[in-house]
Amino acid sequence: MSTSERLIDATRELLWERGYVGTSPKAILERADAGQGSMYHHFKGKPDLALAAIRRTAEELLATAEGVLDGPGTPYERIEAYLRRERDVLRGCPVGRLTMDPDIIASDELRAPVDETLDRIRERIAAIVEEGKEQGQFAPSLDGEEIAAAVLATVQGGYVLARASGSPGAFDAGVRGLLSLLAPARQA
Image 1 (cartoon, helix red, strand yellow):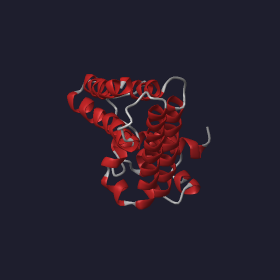
Image 2: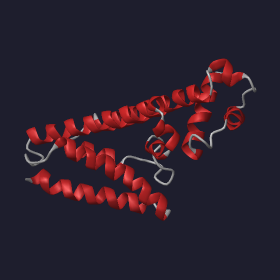
Image 3: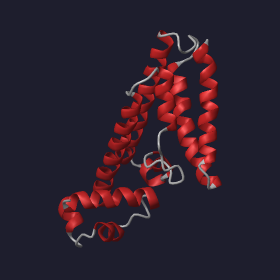
Image 4: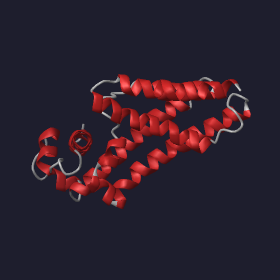
């Protein structure tokens, strides 16, 4: 792995663990096992490296989500697969956690990949709901955008509940609750 890749990977992990302020250039270099000047050789500075790391994390999360949402099954089954997919629930979402970081939210440039990723996932879920409505699997009264927002809110809120309780059970309960609300509409 190249030095720039090691720097990006180290920054991704540190942002997830510590946030932007807690991710010092020294910590990045130590985690990446890179020399002192290497960060500035490959990147303009910490913000530039953080942006590369956030973009990479966002791309991977989006690819994982699309892989599940575009997979086999009915629209309900694909949404269910997205909600139930394997996650490190107690660690939280590597993209969603960035929304809690005031330094990232204050920067239009650092916040953009976070917002774009969540928007693309929401749009994909909304399209799946509309597909399900056309196939008669979801009630015609459902609003795809609203259901998509509820799905994302359940996932992100589930992370918060699980981390607060120290148990993935809180995340799972939120998922089961949302699915039970969608299931009757699917039968309508």
